[in-house]
Image 1 (spheres, one colour):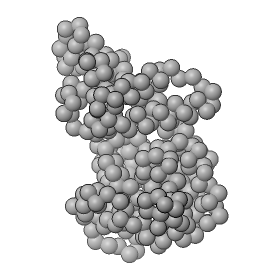
Image 2: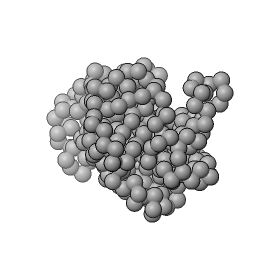
Image 3: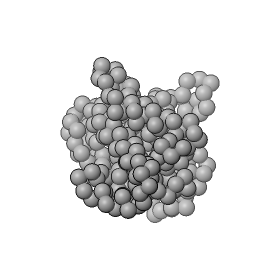
Image 4: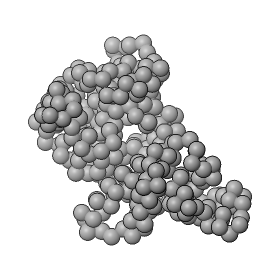
Length: 303
């Protein structure tokens, strides 16, 4: 990648399956990007795409914006506030917030729930850092196209300051000014996604049980009243079987459905459809399918 010192400097922390294509889109938009990951394999993958990749987030000290795309709330806390002494990478004990310069933006794009992001409000404010809550949906394919949907909550100035950066990755859905509301929107989104994938799996498994050609059934119902994005998107991979290309792993939905379950429970809200779907992801993971495509939750009906 050709460095452009006139463009804002961006440190992108977490270049996993979806983070890497997101980072690539940021770089393609002309931002001066440094990708950060502790995984040598992920750094090598980034370098193959022409990205500058490092195992340390030292570049955050001079960045105009730092994007964090990690898996869990605990990883977010560790990355932003620092690892407790004795944990791996504890040498970066100050965390990103401690390393960033006042006036820079910290953009949380992970799905970690409202509380995890809200816990960063005061540390960021004390440091003079703009905090943006912007979890994403759309998966690896849409990430590669720069066509994700970004559930963004931030104050007006923070949103406008980072609009071009965010739009390099997809479409902004403005969710208000309260940090954590973006995560709340994403929780509702993940409830629906969790249920829709399992519903599609159940329907196609029933078609097989009835002795029907599931491919023919999928074609017949996908564009009708019973259709859904998840049926059309995951359905073909469900029929491919366990070797289907992994676009989003079962383990992601174990995490996300469990997170949404915790959020709902903390508000005294019963979500029986979510819990039924969550049980299926857990069953699939227990069967050794955690790293397989989430479409393979259908195997829980076929066994």
